[in-house]
Length: 255
Image (tube, rainbow, N blue to C red):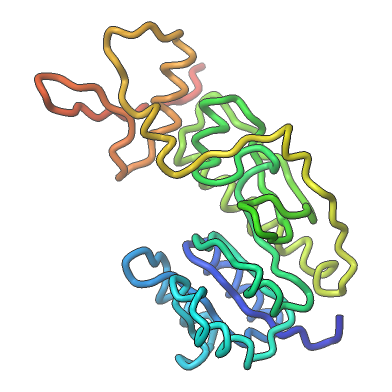
């Protein structure tokens, strides 16, 4: 790739803010920005400020399937897309505009925990936790892997503490891998999808309600409670006289 890589950045949340802020500190050229609409936007003000992109080059992620949006982005002549915690599926028409492809940083050790809430399912299902930088294809977190880093799950981890560790690992992995990616020398390894796992956003509904007369092993119950401990979210619950009783678990190492 040439010395000047024209980047289209797509992101949401703290990891996106940290990533775009770091790219700008490295002198990278962010030619356009795609963010979530206000209702689902997180760290939006920080991302916008760090990007230093004028409003004419900022796009609503929910509008990416519209022809006029695609045409406006194409006019920017981006070489590469960088996605960080971006919540919209990218179409072939969009991906075809990026000659160097579009890469995504995902808080899971792919092919395990494609999709939503990787931090929850690594605890509940005992699958490996970690972070992956991968190319985006037409699937959900199914593209070729560029780089990965495993993150240990400790017995005192909750959904929140593991999520925070995964966030930090995402930042480190991207920064360490960017020089190779920028130079067009990054490796790519196809995923063994049959060996992995996938979860939709609503899958947590199946574990959130603790049925008081059901048999659980102690491990199963503790893992669900700690996986769903992420204040201020309500997490796991049981019902008493028609009302939800929400639970959070505090864990710490003893002497």
